[in-house]
Length: 132
Image (cartoon, rainbow, N blue to C red):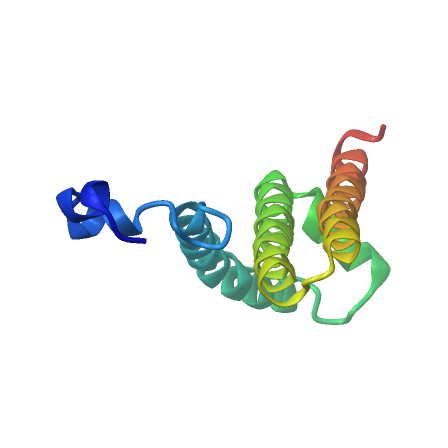
């Protein structure tokens, strides 16, 4: 890539938007934010759930999830973890799968499965709290 227009561009101008998908910065920031959220939510969940559900019984688990603070925390944990997983798998698929049909199929599965799992988990927590 040489020519008069290439020489007139700055170094930053020559490398902008030249990643595999052109969205490297957005992925980087999203993964960092979900990592921070998971670093806060996962230890909270492990500690509070283990303290609240000492006997491991069904009713203790229902009581734990019926508390509005715990319900919101669990929903945030599920959403952050599934989104983080989806972003990571998307990067793996884009970087290492080279056949176009396989790549598209895996990207569709990667978009659909976390969406279905997240909707099911959020529905379960909300139906437990609101009796839907």
